[in-house]
Image (cartoon, rainbow, N blue to C red):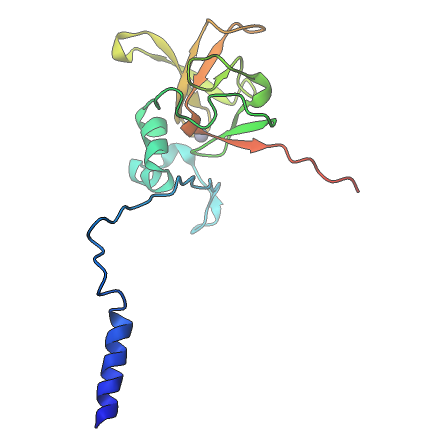
Length: 185
Ligand SMILES: [Zn+2]
């Protein structure tokens, strides 16, 4: 019964289509520069997320490893490597990579040449909180997202006018939402 052998061979081809390749050798895994979209609802329960109660593991699942290291472990990205260290051409608001809270605006951004996005003020007085940070042998003022508590960066008093402040923020802790001009009716 030759048909059974033909079928068998077809099944073999289907099950092992690339068996002549050597996937283990010289394969470079290209991880796309993924930016996970912020969901403000828990899709399973369909109710707003209580950001303060998310566990470490839940954060790890929601964020890219870079976002997680910065936001949840107070990491700092290397200078001049982030997406936003230069003020962008388009105006818009920066939202927290963790929870989507609007934290900074491009209108307050300036090029400070320190290698991180710099702002004279947060988007509004309630969008971020300050916390004393005595790590690494320095006394600094840490800036955290007021909604999810994620670490954003630090604030220093060597900024330009009008506030004289320099909010030095990690690019990976934010996402820029540019203002779309709505078409005229
Ligand atoms: Zn947040």
